Image (cartoon, rainbow, N blue to C red; front, side, top):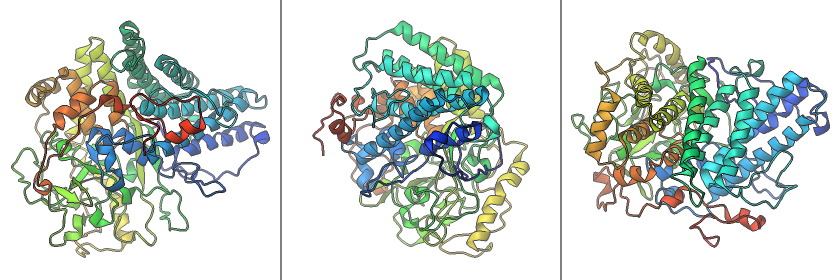
Length: 631
């Protein structure tokens, strides 16, 4: 790892790690230092890795952490949308030949194979001290569990390669026979990791797996097993009693995290994707893509992944992989700052600031703050050109897509100005688990187990932060912490205040792009609000389930947990049918709502096994409903 890290700890400093040389396998366990270095080969698979074989074919996924994760973890919810080749992910037209599925499958099984090799060697390592051996086993099993978790939540049942097994020495292996068998394997890895690891990372090296990471995923795994034993059986023997026991075990995992004192919410949601929030207090497991001030060139890239191009407005140099829906945009209450911290809209003339469906909530540098501008970079969307297609509800980029772009990844580097010369690097955290994941999972377990008061308590606490209440009284301190990056970016870009280039204004700003502090006097009680909201929208689910999953929509848009969490909560169908009713829209540029013209198929939430893998492994059987002949 070179300046890249995962974390489960509170630390404001960026991680500096020596560049380690490759060491021979027979030397990997000669001493503690070598054993620690050897595990880096497993951690390496947590990051985008565009390695190729001798025939110039991709070995690993250079887009890991974005494309396979966005496409399977967000697009099926329709809250995120796409154009071009990616549009099929919004209409349930993925199939066994979808390249993103194959790329993700190969990438994580490569990580599993590395973990299995490492864990086998570590088990026989006599020269590694017991204390170090314990921690390295915990980290290795946590990493293997993470890879299997993605496979299991994406594809359903998959082959389970144990310690010492790889696809090289075990080329033919069937799926786990039952969901319980598969999830018990994953649960055992996270349970062991939680027992072996501490709350703080080994050697204070932020980026290593910790007890908090293992417990967060252990609780998640118990909830998935419960889902497969009841709502999502797909042929499994149903067992409601065992499912309830799984929820109890999950609840215990989450409570340990909440009671540990290791994590706390960032005061401000709007700063979570800023470089100054790297390894912040609520980060439990995060892929921190950052290399300080080293802005890469085409011939010297630290990572192949280009998040700012994938997520920027096409008229500002973006490529159109990620848009956000107007249905998502309109689900927020007035004063909820998570919307302003998550997106920018085109300058759509029909948006009336007095219309509560599109209320921008407050005035910023531009009026409103996210209307027609990326406030962090101070770039006008569409470069301010007359007749720009950002000035309509749906941007036409080959196919129609909402004129809303995510600020979670297109925030800290321009996809337009100075980007094709020496401005490639875009500091970005990819959150896999943060404290709100644990809070909402814990709340769901509480509701399912009859502790309603505790469930609403967790949601209310999260909503206090959402409405800026944790920022009140701390405005100056937050500005001093988060504003310097944007002024340093302005220095690098070379623009003085008042100078413009297509509406770009930089240098020496005194205020954070989205002003700190709450804009409401009081946050409405969650139970009161969601009881009314569920009735008005016409959901068929219980009020608590609407509340938990709507909070997930607001909190985790463009984070890869959204579809998996909604699925295991058994809320996906209600979400799609209620939030995205079937409709035929003639003039999408003038109407905000999504044109869903297909029948939702619940079984498609489990993705098809990639066709190439079935060809290579005759023991594999395709998931129900899919064909191996799809093209």
